[in-house]
Length: 141
Image (tube, rainbow, N blue to C red; front, side):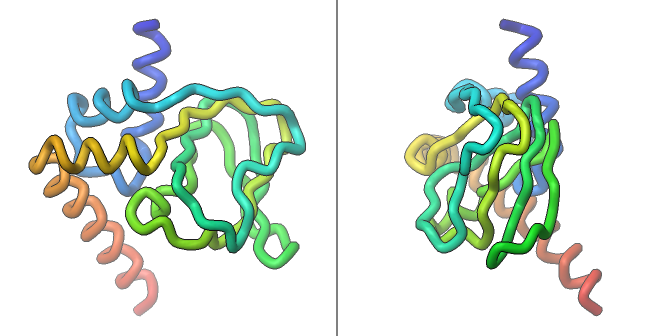
């Protein structure tokens, strides 16, 4: 189990949304997440559907499509769906497992509980979002 937790922490630390969080904060997220396994061909999220889950890929590969066209590939250590933790907005793409996958899934309700219980967590999360927005702004100039 300790090895598994270390893998979760390592994967969560690479998520841009969580970039300002401490190891302790990441540990709280890892404990709240649920590990799932899916078969190749499983649609994990559908473009346009309301989202309420965030996924971190622990093993396997997925493809990302928009309006039926492939726009990206995702593999171990990458994540998707983080914006749905914040606003439950529509998914901007479809993500489908290309291989058997192992994922850590965090639901919006668990995430909201973290925000309510730990004000410091919220500040760190906002700092990570601000950093991400600045990087995006710099790339678009």
